[in-house]
Length: 141
Ligand SMILES: [Zn+2]
Image 1 (spheres, protein in one colour):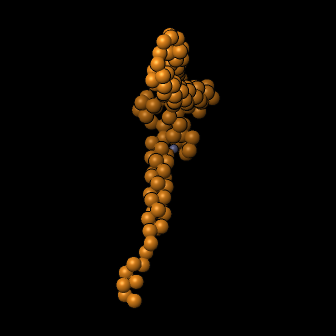
Image 2 (tube, helix red, strand yellow):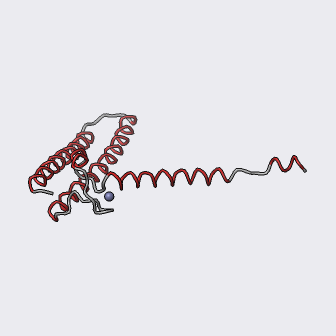
Image 3 (cartoon, helix red, strand yellow):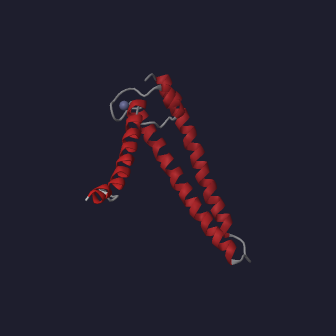
């Protein structure tokens, strides 16, 4: 990957990093505001707790994204950015533009997805095998 391209993706990644960090900070701020204020009934308190749970879940997802962005920036510094971690091949720049923290090329990614689907199909087949068989045989005898 040329330096100009690396710089472009670094800028993209830094922008995502800034956006996600701001979202996390907003979540924390909203959480604090929710704790202030008096005279609320039990229903309000209960829904507050639900909101906090949702915020925690959101925070986890954002933190995960932040991790991915940081990893991509590390790969940029190491000169490994844009290489598929599975096959070492080049990740298409169009894919990187859409998802700057992609770690796998389209081929490997779709293979992973196929494997996941196959595993799901297998577990369905295992479930089907549990159904009692041989009802016809009983009739024959
Ligand atoms: Zn690959």
